[in-house]
Length: 408
Image 1 (tube, one colour):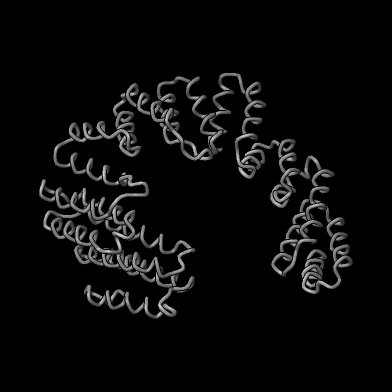
Image 2: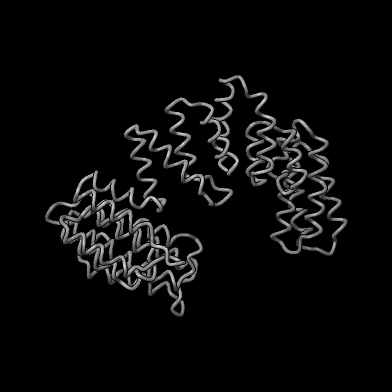
């Protein structure tokens, strides 16, 4: 790749890589990975070029080629998404640092590429590309050329406008007309969450806490988002109350964030309550609320981290699948109870196992049981399972291999 110095050569190389990995016009899982890794390598090498316009054009070409592949490839590994993001990050870096003489070329490239059928079909990524035009717009004529792309990229489901449309417009207004004009535009479109977020962040940065709080509280009252995902407004309010040292309201926001699934805030709440001397009276009620509101795996991870083994034991009893991860910790304080859960779950999984992959899963459980301190019991289970299922040759094979390894 380092010897390819023209866009024509690079285009040929890209098409060759794609053609070599296709099977009957489709990119299978491994082929898609190989192609995407090769394209990312090309992008990395292009970033070393002194010719920034050539590097920019390489990014645009590869961006479109990846979008074309998405409908004809197994992209389940995420490699295609990584390649798209790598393209866009490169375009952003090159756009941000564009010299005066390169801006017209780069803006023209973005406008032309955004009109490509692939960008229109994948409008979210098309808008991702178009957003970089903000760094390149020089006058109102340039702005109109950007705005003209919006109708081509269309709307989201339910005929809702893509929020990127407003964010791009706000960025261009700020670039051409100044902050005050951009702020006025934002205030006129507060119904778009991304616009409201811009104003909130700007207000906090300017220490206009009353305005920021008002904007967040209004949005929070109307929030109907994912119950297991904290609303962004709660995070902003927590920051506002932290900076204003309004502890009571800060605690309220942290509780909301916690109950909506972000357990990383548990320690912050604990520390605040300890400073206020209220942790002991808060702890029990909070853990009960978290039990009612968190997903079981999140609650179990939190209890494990906090050393709440008694409550963790109850969660694992209700969801034995977690014993593999927390059995060793539980066995330190509640060996009999933990071992009982292990044995019941192992026998249940063994009875349901029907292929070698599942047999290996049973053996992994037994190994976890062994490492939790139940060495003789684990060996006994192996013998018992071999006796129970003598006709499951593959299972017996896996169990005997495990038995041999545990003897060492």
